[in-house]
Image 1 (cartoon, rainbow, N blue to C red):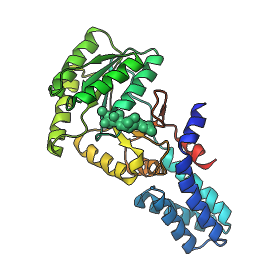
Image 2 (image 1 turned 135 degrees about the vertical axis):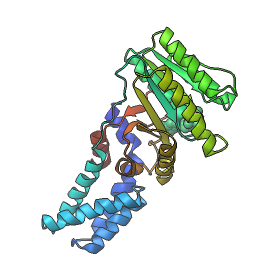
Image 3 (image 1 turned 120 degrees about the vertical axis):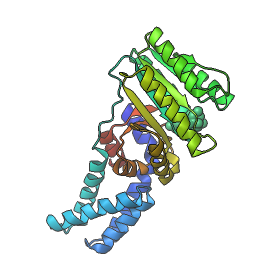
Image 4 (image 1 turned 90 degrees about the vertical axis):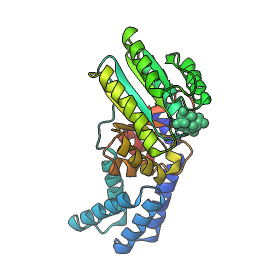
Amino acid sequence: MSFFDKLKQGLTKTKEAITGKVNEVFSNFRKVDEELLDELEEALILSDVGVNTASKIVDNLRKRIKLEKIEDADKVKDILKEEISNILIEKETSLNLSTKPSVILFVGVNGAGKTTSIGKLSASLKSQGKKVLVAAADTFRAAAIEQLEVWANRANVDLIKRPEGSDPASVVFDAITKTKNDNYDVLIIDTAGRLHTKKNLMEELGKIQRIIDRELPNADQDILIVLDGTTGQNALIQAKEFSEVTNITGIVLTKLDGTAKGGVVIGICDELNVPVKLIGVGEKIEDLQVFDAKEFAKALFE
Ligand SMILES: Nc1nc2c(ncn2[C@@H]2O[C@H](COP(=O)(O)OP(=O)(O)O)[C@@H](O)[C@H]2O)c(=O)[nH]1
Ligand SMILES: [Mg+2]
């Protein structure tokens, strides 16, 4: 299956949710009036686009209807698609990998899909000829370390681990040392999603960050927050919370396959000053895609 077919298949339910609701609105309206716009706004909110973004889209729609003197409901539908696509297509989405080595730090709550996404990304980078090291800095549970090891084996990349309960920052330090000594291209760091308090989490991530900055001051860095797409608007809230404690450079949105809440991508692209860089469309090793906004919009509307 091609990447696009896979994406399209993964987005089936989201597509049904958004276009289903929007089409229903249009089937009830022949006239372009304020009531139509209200109903459209509600349909977007119900599709997990988010209140702010839905209202922004409809405001733009209202302006264009007036400016372009639109009376035909079908034309409104076209403009709606355009407005949504415009929101999706604004940002640069490639990973920062121009230095050797470069570092990718994964953060996000438990269960979001960090470890799985690291496994998938490692395999993809490896297939591009890169020498990849992964660091098991989620030392909170033994199972988390084992799970990363399984993925590292699957992706055929090297792993640095220490026993459960070890200081995550020291795992990162060891990993950086190995990265330098053995000439790795990319170091990918897994972190714990939940500590006792937000303060703990902040301190932990801060410590890891300082070590990276000190030991690899010239390395390209990505700090990717992994968000579970099936949680809809909650994903947006989490992204905002994490951006308070760390300098996020990109979003990995997982589990878009099989959820109807993928509309949250639109809200995320609109509300956060951070690009969606990768999306998860399945549990298999090949099921991580570079986020291509154009393709995404196409998969949503065609
Ligand atoms: N369907 C689907 N499941 C996923 C995806 N990404 C992760 N998962 C599943 O989500 C669960 C939690 O993932 P995990 O990587 O352990 O999350 P972590 O706690 O953030 O490290 C696992 O069962 C994964 O198989 C995805 O893109 N699609
Ligand atoms: Mg994990």
